[in-house]
Length: 230
Picture 1 (cartoon, one colour):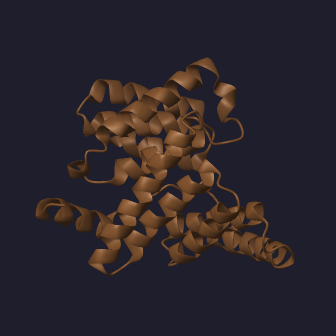
Picture 2 (picture 1 turned 90 degrees about the horizontal axis):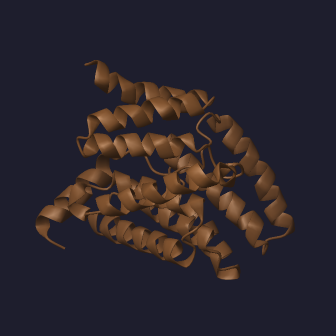
């Protein structure tokens, strides 16, 4: 890896603040912690249950992503154990995302580089194993989008967004138990802004805002639309 790329990576890992969370952005930290207590009690009774391990790992992942709590290591440990018991691609994708959070949280430059490389590799593998999984695709979009352009993840973001938009237009019900499909429009708008295709980005932002009732998402769209008022 070249010196310039390493510099960009370290800057990203020092200052980046947005990594995938399971669309629980309106949940308070207290609510997260209360749910963790409940799931940990379940795990004590059934410590080899991969579904409980996975659920608890995702909770720790989301707290780390949303509230910058230093629990990314716990997320990795739980998700690794869940994946060892049941090799499900979505667990692998979350494990990869958890590793990018470890990279963000570490003060060791070598750990940062190794962790983000390991994380993206796992996410790419999970996508290849289950390309029709819309949740895995969104995990990859968000993690790829946050990396500096020098990592050349833009084409990956573009293809994943094209796929999700195609699925949404044909079978919007696919997202019902996964996440609000307005997230696809949000990231499409953000990607197009980065590509300097502002007119099209504006249309996607407007459309996405119309699709959702989620107050957090509406705020995100409002922040994007402010760009066009300047």
